[in-house]
Length: 409
Image (cartoon, rainbow, N blue to C red; front, side, top):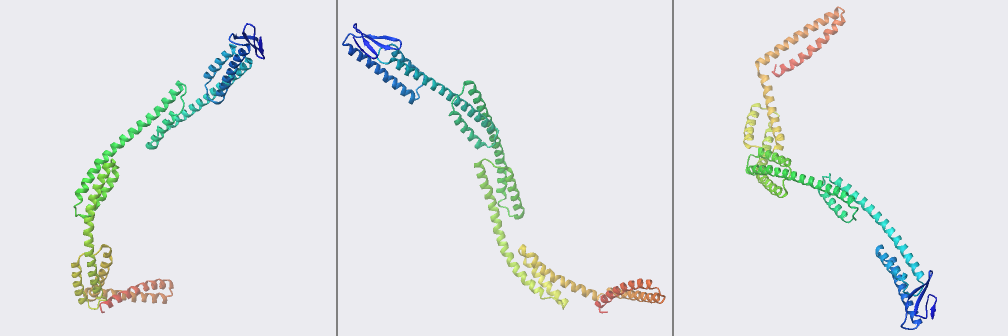
């Protein structure tokens, strides 16, 4: 019989292994010596040690699932329990028990991690739904649309929840996107209708602008173009391609008219500038008539100057008040000289002036007499009152005498 610390072979060739529960039959060995029998079953034990070590490493260093780990543990435990090896089988069972505890611990950790990830995913999806529902009311069509597409990509990257919760959140999320898309579609449909209306209006404006482009009625046509431009702005924008084409035609028609007007105005301005030079020469000639010393000669000379003035034509608008003001000043001076001459030579006016002077002189003499009598009577109050009235009549008499002097009297 042969034996070692963990097993023995009896005389019949039966091999035993020692365990805490006593000896267990390992098997029968008839092919060789007892030592070879023990060595054979000890190698089988070493094989189990290696397999358990490999499984310990896999569980420790890889993400082996709990199910696969337990299957592997059960497979090794079956081999250990069948006692087909010689060695410390109780130690192997203890190592397998520790592996079971490690797997259970990992299972709980993964369960907790999964629950946490699920809660985080639920929170994240609820946040996505809330943002989508807020965006559903936005009128920032481009940015909100881009953001909703981004939210969809984010949703796809999140783990699924339980079917009921996931379906409810997705329904709200999808409804928000649909509501936004429906509003955006309605908005752009309305915008398209407005742009179509704008196109029709602007086509009419272009037609009128092109019809006016050859007009030479400069003032009213320019005013009408300003009205057309205001109508253009009020019409709103048409579709981009139509807007660009219509605007090019509208501006083109305006350019034809205003370029023609500018050319005519430039020619007119040149002509009027020449007219201004001629009228400035006439004004200088007219101003030399002042002061008037010979009314008849001045009147004849001014009439000649004025005829030449009228024949010249218009001057630039900004120069008109200045040049005409100088000419009118000469004309007024000659008219004033004529009026003075008429007053001086008019017999009826002379007679009226002389009569007024006589009346005023009589009134002054009478008041002077009344003042003297009041003072002689000692009535100073009455004398002072009459004296004030006397001063007023004397002032009127002085003015009448000066008027009479103008008549040479």
